[in-house]
Image (spheres, rainbow, N blue to C red):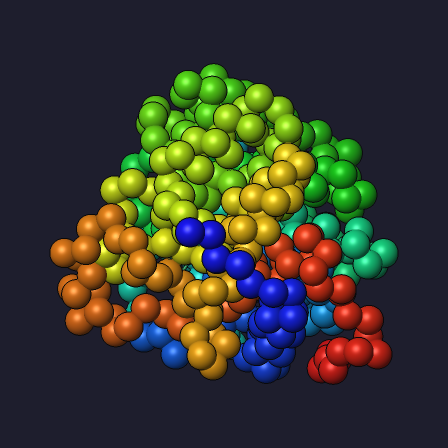
Length: 382
Ligand code: BGC
């Protein structure tokens, strides 16, 4: 049975979400993944953060998003020499090992932290570039403020974007993941169109993006849909994001439409989307943020009705105090694996700021929430 949520409740949750993200943003600009969850506490991810900033930007929280992008740029500038080493080694045909790459997450005050993590993931460095360019366009801002961060990211992506690395779920370092490639392409193409690259870097960015596109077309499609990784026949919920909001794959193309229906058929139960069929993390539940990505893909393909159902379900997963979880256990793929994670890391991450941002993003896209103007929104300015 489809869950139906009235617009007032959607609006209230969207407002609460913007407020929560605003309150939890670190003074230096970083967005925490979750303020309370043991394994994420104190850290900010480029991936989560870029989508959080995109949601905040769409909701009219211009300064909050800008400050996150400032933080991203700062992290990159502080690692300028490392990026140069990585790029030089790649150009000389002696690529550096994975442990010499940039981290996936940073502490909120910008260090690398002492906790072990599944570092080396390229998607976030593409996603933030896509998001900052989209933000600047949406609000008619100059991109000069982030030009250096964009240029450093392009160098890094050209050198590393083709490599196998951990995926969105910090798994399978041995594979080249199609959604990761899609994020890399989005970053490179956005940068190339942004006007902040010189001719040589712009051409190099376009060439690397074209190679990655060709790779997806020839090796990352099976039975007409995008695949989880190069050589796989499966799908992954993250693939919806490269259809929308990122637009790497056109939603209305045969590839876009077939990918949306493959995610619907293979990963969606009711309106809840699983990450992938073999998921066992917390028993392999359904992720509200993935329902929102699928909803955005449907909007881009013209199916607003299905998008609204997906949004309503995502909103229905909020706790009584209006907090959205990372996942819910209504339908588990591996119920016998749930307890071990609760024992290891505690209850499911709640609130997860990325979930909140995706509800906001889809609600705005469906015109259920009007973007705030500066006078209706209390923002901390830099
Ligand atoms: C997810 C990542 C996410 C991180 C922080 C992990 O469990 O796999 O996609 O970036 O949590 O939210």
